[in-house]
Image (cartoon, rainbow, N blue to C red; front, side, top):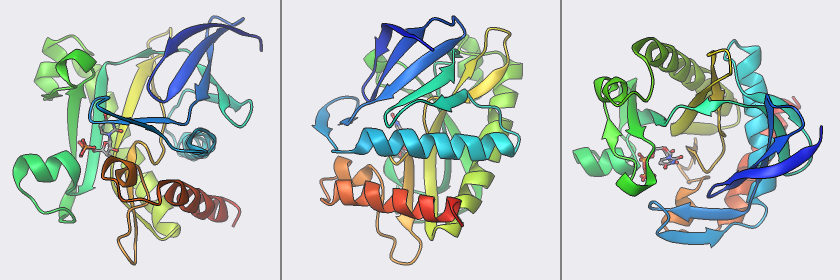
Length: 239
Ligand code: UDP
């Protein structure tokens, strides 16, 4: 696979074309941003961890019936993925109140929901990724009604699978954000990444935060938390 010109550079990743029009190469950076780009920094070694973690989790999901964009890990920071058109929709699933949910609805962080919740944001930096409901998503033509049903079903399945997996690692999956894309034939697949940048992961015993909230909230021990969560995942995978 030959790497060609850079298509796009995002906050945490770069994306390159390849000699195959149906494939792209994603390259993970150590750059971190929060609050819609207002807070900027780097987390040393994050790109390597997020690349590996996302690939291992996507392979686990794929085995369990969730189609993903993952093709092959190429190096520490680079992965070959299927080319998709990303649906401009952030899909957020929550098991426990935290972050914007706690703030918006006045619910203390840590309140466990009786059943998981889902919400959507319209992926648009200029507008600050506003919340939108499923009717808004269809009205805005971000996706069709049918695609949205597929997205919702996959999102809850991903939650069940990730929750069980992290549980084995002594980690509580609080919430996460995922993105989906369309393959050239229209098939909906899970895309983007699944990492401590995009999930809230708490130590099951101590409730210690092992994710990007350490960076967002200046809690210190950011690199250590990324390394800790990666080592727990590797232990579970190698069991
Ligand atoms: N999230 C993300 N990207 C975003 C916004 C949120 O990956 O642009 C993730 C975040 O890491 C958390 C979940 O989605 O696991 C829910 O985030 P929330 O809406 O509470 O927003 P935040 O408090 O991070 O602003």
